Each structure stands twice: as C-alpha cells, then as structure tokens.
Length: 387
Image 1: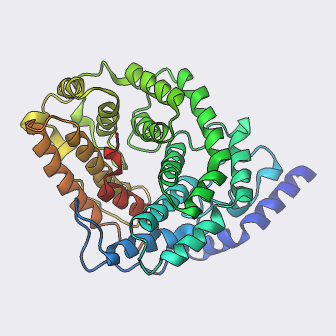
Image 2: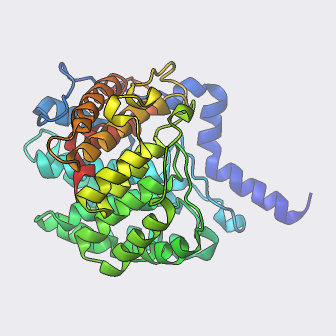
Image 3: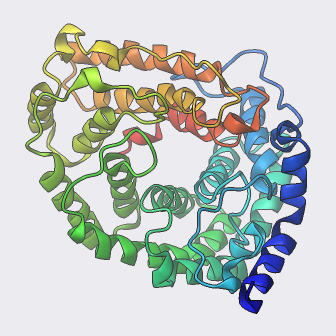
C-alpha cells in the first residue's frame, strides 16, 4: 500500500467513523428518528393548513435540517482533500440525507414561516434558518459549485429547488428574508451560469421519473426567472422547452409508472408547456400529447399508485409520485379553458392523488420523512400553478 493511499484511507475513516460504526451496528437505528406526530386531520387540497398541520409539516423539515447522518453526498472526489464530512462540504445544506432534500427542506420552512407566522415553532424556524443562511456558509457552497469538477452536481434537480427557494425569499417582504436572499446570491449566480452553459449543449431532454427529469427542472427554473426578472434566462428556458417538447405527440401512457418513480415525466412535461404556450395553443398541444385525456382514458396516469414499503428509500418514491402528479394535474387544469371537460378530470385526479400521497407523509421512517413534507406542502400550496 502506498503512503498516499494509506493516508487517504485514514482520512476516510476519520471523516466517517461515526456514520459507519452506526451503520454496521444497526442500519435500522441509523435511519430511525423520533416520530413526527401526524396531525389529527390530514390536510385537504384547496384548503389552508391548520396550525397543527403547518406545525407537523415544519417538524418534518426541522427533524432533518441539522441531521448530518445518514447522508448521501454523491460528490466526485478530486483528491484526498475532498474526503470530508458532509457538514464541512456543504455547511448550509448538509442535512436531510442529501443536498437537494436539504435545500427543499429549507424552502418548506421558509414557506411555512411566511404563510403561518404564528405557529409555535416560528421562533425556532427563524433561528435555525438564520444559522444556515449565513454569508460565509453560502459562499463556501457557491465555491463548490463554481469548481468545474462539480459542474454536473445536482444538475438540474437540486438547482431547480435552489431557484424555488430563492424565488420564495425574493417575494417575501421580511427583514430576515431580504438578508437571506442576499446571502444566497453567490450560489444563485453560479447556478444560473451553469444553466446557461448547460442547456444549449443538452441536445435531447432527459425523460425519467427521478431527479434528472428535464421537464420538472425547466418548469421550476422558468418560475424563478420570471419572479426575479431574468429575461435572458427565461428566454433560453422557453426556447429549449420548445425544442425539446413542442412537437411531442401521443405520449406512451402505458409505460408509466416505473417502480421507483417520484415523478411522471409526461405530467411534468405538460406542466412545463402550460407555462410557455398561450392558453389556446396549450389546449391544442395537450390534446395532441394526451389524446385520451378528455375521455379519461390515460391508463394508470390518472390513478394513484400504491406504496408497498415506506422503509425502502426507493420504493417510497411512489409516495412522492402521487403528490407530484397532483401538483402537475392541478396546474394543467388551471391553464385550460373554463368549460374544458379535461379540467374536471384533472381536478378529480389531483384530489385522489393528494389524498393517497398524504397518507404516507408521516410514516415515522426517515427514508420518506426527510423529503415528503416538501412534496406535500408544494402540492397543497399549489406553487406549481404560478405563471
């Protein structure tokens, strides 16, 4: 064994000793957490959250915000110096199992604090967000993404959630929010540049039920660009969306879902296109894309899916699929003409999917609880309907 390899192994051991010891001793104990109590009544699509419901969703994010392990960093190791604990690598967004979940956990807390400022956890939320959103910590995260070795890290799923977080802060008239938004600018600017460099080179869209899906990322990033007034980025996103999706016809509905989807690539695509096409043009595009929708004939695309194991980190993805389908269906319905029969079909499907998805949010298992609260709130708040 060479000296360099020996020292690298020592560093890996030192950086992850607690993690691996816990894992080898008891994987179940590692993933366990104090259960977040489910509210007496689950939320309902279209109704404001009760104080109890808002507190319960906030508690899911708070439970993971500073929980460093278990952690899935998925980063490229450029040298022995790259082998560091998650909190050192990502000082702001190290919790909640992975970077993107940490980012959207912060979004959840910002949104809850903004919409429900009187909940009992408000002071704790504000304090803990302030501890993460420091200029120093976010500058270090920006430097990580500015390194070309990391140019594909979290592309574009994590980027999209960072943009959603920035957009939420950008429109909130609150002294802390204004400061946090300012501190996020270096990271925001790096990721905008990454988008502008990457998308012209992406010849074909990525169609998948998991993180890399292009439709989801472009939809969220368009909302961000419009919110902050970045016309150049907005036009690039619109142009690429048209290249990727404008001519799509007869989406193969029988191929969804796959066994570990948390997205429907087809619904994500339609949710994107309703943002960039005039209403009449979108209505016709949707008819070409999903010709069976007006008859309710879309196979399993309109049917909620069953989650067979909430303790399996991949199988529990299907809980998120129910929720992400719901926000897409709701957003698409909102963009159709008032008397279009597809509206009612989509609204009914969104309600059924939301009900099914909410049943698995408070499972008591970290595999789902570290991220499903965000999907629940995103659906309930109907954020995706923003034009």
